[in-house]
Picture 1 (cartoon, rainbow, N blue to C red):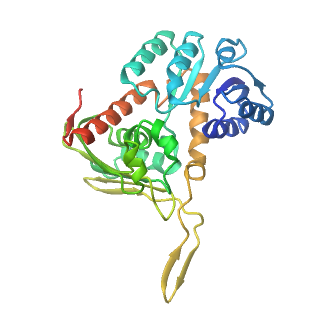
Picture 2: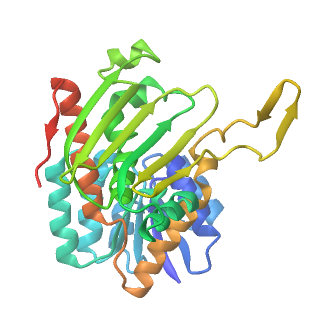
Picture 3: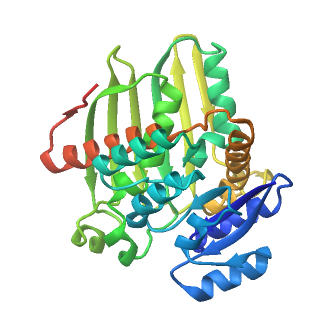
Length: 330
């Protein structure tokens, strides 16, 4: 039984706690949060102890930690957990600073502890199946990847102000997915963006509507579009075009029921948000982490995948600021 210390009892921490609770191979041993009431509630639900983060990192009865705290706390928690010899699951982004992530890599790899970056979309059954079929050669060499990600509504402005911006907070998932599907690193990036959904987002220094074009050294192209608004639900689609055909993963709808009348065809809306859409992905992701710790196999995506996604997010922010493409260091 893998004994996990859960750091952060907010929305994502609760998701991970529910996932772990349904597993036979792992349990939540202890929880910590800056808000004592949140920790108390989750500890009671899990049958776990409520401790400080420092106590969890030092505890001999904790084998691994799941970090779901605010991003600006990740650096210290990762370093403390690695030095204590504990396996680490960390939500994205690892840190807003590429230099800080590199410092974490040095400590994590020096300690030899497993590390999984929380890019849950890799574990979505549909996206994982699409990636497997690319690997099987179903569409030949990949030429063009198109990723669409649109939230049903923007988060509060208070969140926008501390999020690091759309590229680092929202599109970072898509940057990781682009690398996952393309199988080749990108060498050039061009980003555009606007505040079309809410002027307050622009006033906060961010955009709510954005598109990025990425190219590889061999000329393969990925296009990503994001919006903080989609009237029809949580829009998550991928299309991969190759030399022999195309693979496509469509939205998950609330039901598969379709009405056909003389007025046409009507289908259910897309599932409303990430908690429903990626429920299976969160379970598969946590199972992969537990399995990596138990077997000693490398955790995937690892800490270096978190670094690469952050490099792309920073490049997108720079491209938006300058209005020019950015050449990525190899």
